[in-house]
Length: 155
Image 1 (cartoon, helix red, strand yellow):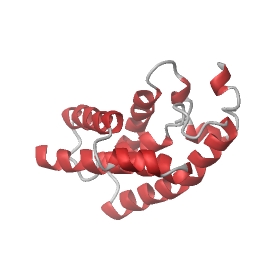
Image 2 (image 1 turned 180 degrees about the vertical axis):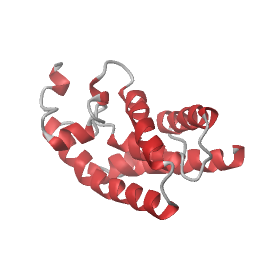
Image 3 (image 1 turned 30 degrees about the vertical axis):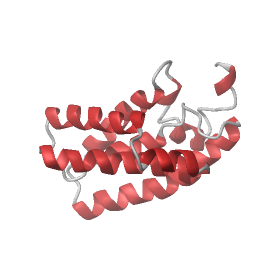
C-alpha cells in the first residue's frame, strides 16, 4: 500500500464502501474504476421501480456524506482520490430512467466521467468551496445530474 493509502483498511466497512469495494485502490484513474464498479449496482437497480431506485440513490447519497467524510478523515486527506463512493452514486444518477442498453451504459459512463473530470461550472464552484463528506458527494451528484440531462436528450 502506498503511503497515501496506508490509513485505509479494506476490512473496515466504511473504508470498503468509500473505496468502491476496493476499486478506488487500483492504480491510476481511481474515479474511472469507481464508476466501473457502479455498473453492476446499476444493473441490479435498473429493473426496480422508480420509487425504489430513487429511494436507494437518496439513501446512498446521504450515507455517502458520512462514508466519504469519515474515510477522508481517516486517510488524513480532504478528498482522497481512492474514495469513489461519490462516483458510484453519480453514475446511478446519470442512468436514472435511461433505457438499459449496452450503448446507454457506454454513453452514460463517458458523459459522467467527462463532467466529473472537467467539472464545468457550477460543479467546479462546489468542488472548490464545499468541503468534507458533503463536498465530496455534491460535486459528483451535480456531475451525475448534468450527465443525466444529456442522457435524456440523447435517449
